[in-house]
Amino acid sequence: MNHVPGGVTGSAPVEFELPPEHRLLRDAIRDFLAREVEPVVAAHERERRFPGEIVRRIGELGWLGIPYPEDEGGAGMDTLAYAVAIEEIARTWGSLALIVAAHTSLGCGPLHIAGTPEQKAQFLVPMASGRVLGAYGLTEPGAGSDAGATRTTARLEDGAWVIDGGKRFITNAGRAGTYVVAARTGSRPDGSAEVSAFVVPADAPGFTVGRLEDKMGLHASATGELHFDGCRIPAGNLLGEQGNGFPLFLQVLDGGRISIASMALGLAQAALDAATSYARERRQFGRPIGSFQGVAFMVADMATELAAARLLVHRAAWLKDRGRSYRLEAAQAKLFASEVASRATNAAVQIHGGYGYVEEYRVERYLRDAKLTEIGEGTSQIQRLVIAREILGLRVV
Ligand SMILES: Cc1cc2nc3c(=O)[nH]c(=O)nc-3n(C[C@H](O)[C@H](O)[C@H](O)COP(=O)(O)OP(=O)(O)OC[C@H]3O[C@@H](n4cnc5c(N)ncnc54)[C@H](O)[C@@H]3O)c2cc1C
Image (cartoon, rainbow, N blue to C red; front, side, top):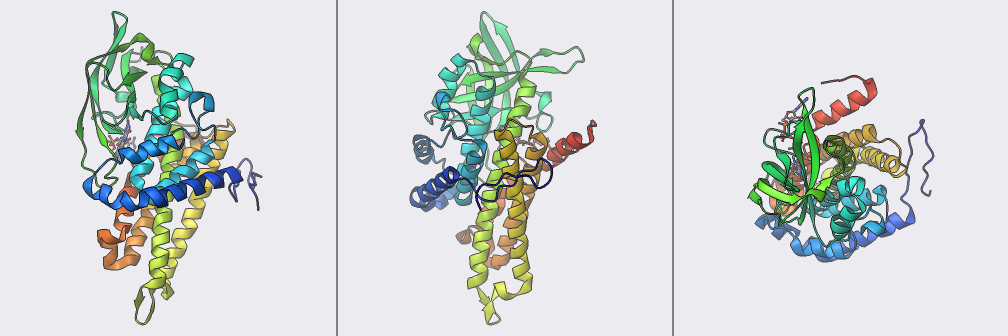
């Protein structure tokens, strides 16, 4: 059956098979990962080493701007292609998937949505064409789920924006050439923060990268602090209208959630692949452990939940690609896929027994990496809030 977007329930599209160009992209990425990436994953993770050379190669191959138009430096494909790419990368290496997802959705996304033609030419084209890595600074020590509690400030002074404050947990910190950051530019009449978005080049005076985190997983990705100490950027680096930063960031996160959900799919698929072959090969009591219902049913559940999660992710991408509203569907996809990934990777460790608990068999890495998908770009609790608000039309807190 070919690409069938015919709805089964109301507006819900169903993608039974990827279109040919998406399959070609997936196969090209799979081939590249098998040849150039897979052999070096374990060493990078062990040494917590950022894969700078591999990221550069991915940029050359045109995979750092998959969903953006060619005149913005991108590959001119769609969100579905991007989701397929992130899933495929995560199946081999969670850290690399996070690096690419943060760059593409969060670094490039705000510039694609709100950039002027000049800003796109100066910042987006180098990023989407893979020459410059991007990052996105929203989270602060006191502003996580409550992103509106931003303390970082920006003020206009002698024709330049001056930024003071700091960010925490920023993916690609120290590796990015361009940072999109949120800062308070004033207060609204009700006392809430007026938040605006800014483009900060890595070499802006007064900008430094602080400590990098020692994380539970995703060891080869860089997560760190950003410091702004009287950081001066040109007045033209305000992104969108002054005060429109918050709706812009929410829009960016809606799209970003599809990529984190795709990363969850890749990790769950890797866990299922590993569990399946191990359950066939490992013998106890004279037979393959996969022939015990207790093990076989774990595999059955993993495969079934993964298939359902993939449909949710592809539905959200399908809606986004058609310019339809997708906030609810992206949150559902992210919530479900991330929880599926945690369950599937946990089951894969269980199926491997003691061998699952040691590094040699990789499944322990999948479990550690999958946990992030329940936290980044809005925790599972925040996804449930978004979903409930969209359905009930009430201010659920
Ligand atoms: C590896 C990694 C990479 C990251 N990359 C980036 C990045 O590139 N850019 C960026 O800006 N940020 C990034 N983050 C930050 C991430 O988005 C935040 O950690 C996340 O949004 C949660 O914020 P917090 O950690 O402050 O937790 P908190 O908001 O303090 O939440 C703590 C707990 O309280 C719950 N909670 C909070 N509010 C509510 C509520 N209203 N209702 C119910 N429960 C609630 C949460 O669900 C959670 O369980 C990254 C984080 C990590 C770990």
